[in-house]
Image 1 (cartoon, rainbow, N blue to C red):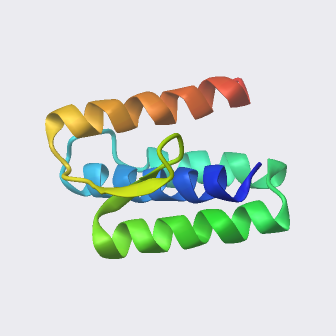
Image 2: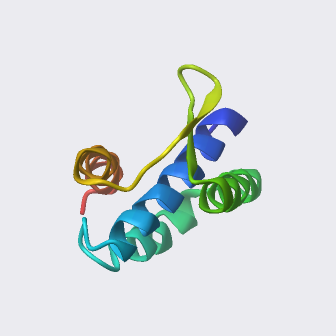
Image 3: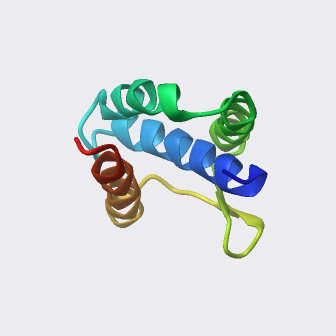
Length: 96
């Protein structure tokens, strides 16, 4: 995957973790999904996703790949609903 896609993915996993902490999506699914994805990721994918997740956690932002920019993220019901959709897309791609 491209660097920007991997950074975006990592930032969305950070957002998902914040949603889990707030009880807005099912707890534990973020780490479970990351574990399921890891065998399919290259070394650079993993590094770029980790960088995106670290920045996303630190700054409460997500990287929107289509716009090539970081945007603020507030873990509320509407935002977490969208994040859940991203997680569901990954889960579907994995065949889970």
